[in-house]
Length: 127
Image (cartoon, rainbow, N blue to C red; front, side, top):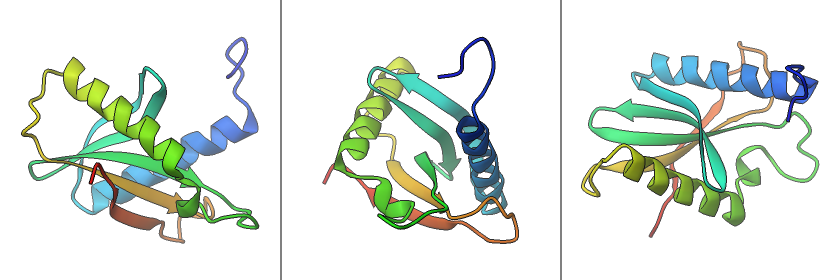
């Protein structure tokens, strides 16, 4: 958390990664809805729409992949937080259970915009 308005290097890199992911997804035809939606127990980086489907997007930047890749870092605990936050968001927006939703991951290994991110559609769900 930033103190007194100062953002850490990591927070700034995270912001850049989210901006890059958003631009990439918009180039793929998705429509931006919201960013950094905070709910009880979690935060959703991006909410987009693809046709009639609401897409909750987790953005991961991991330049050092010694332990795991950016995509692999979205573990079961993180998935559960995203699922709970998405359910809260849907309730807050008074959206019905009938709206199709999915969870995507956009994984970046660098902030170099010439390197396209890894986009994993329907990365996990409530199965």
